[in-house]
Length: 217
Ligand code: ATP
Image (cartoon, rainbow, N blue to C red; front, side, top):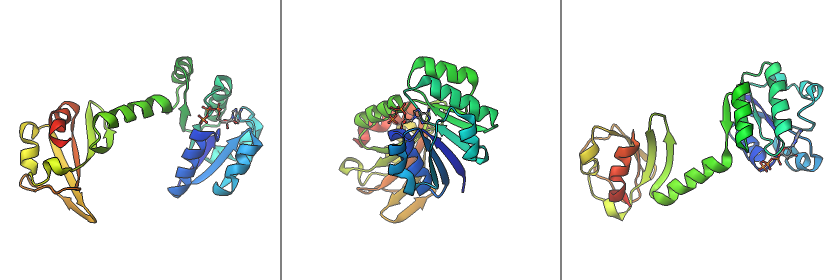
């Protein structure tokens, strides 16, 4: 179990803090707005009304003991940057920050934080990709144009084997597993036959995945 600080409990910060709690972590939530804090207080380990640019307030809340901090104040560039500088001076190693503009991103990358998040852009790209490939339930970029994707098997490719599905791209895509209702099949052989509603997890290059996409839709 980790201990996290979430600074700014707007839509983004509150969703992140509730998910961290659901995953079994301890979360200190901070917001300057008492109404917002009161709405979420009973769902977090600790929720406090405080100005995140006030060093004493952050120290009083024992933010220094946190493994990681998520700064989710998008609108106020000044508050976000000041807060990041304070967290860095408190020697918090893992600092993730929501950025809302290019200048915000530039300053954060110059100061040096663990990760800069652009929720709207990242979500926009995910939505576009889901619209473009509706059969892809989930995907994860693992860098260098490589992805892990979970694909729902539809009527179109039920009954076909993995070898047939991946025939032109068998060297560029690895089938990792198939989930069929509650059963997980690992070490998938080329002869494995897919059934309707199977979830197939593949790892491979974007180009190779695009090659097989028309066969799946
Ligand atoms: P979202 O999209 O997540 O709702 P947003 O990008 O519009 O949020 P803001 O409105 O700037 O971002 O801020 C998110 C939260 O941060 C708000 O609840 C706000 O009260 C809080 N906040 C802003 N400034 C401070 C500050 N100095 N200290 C603590 N909390 C702050």
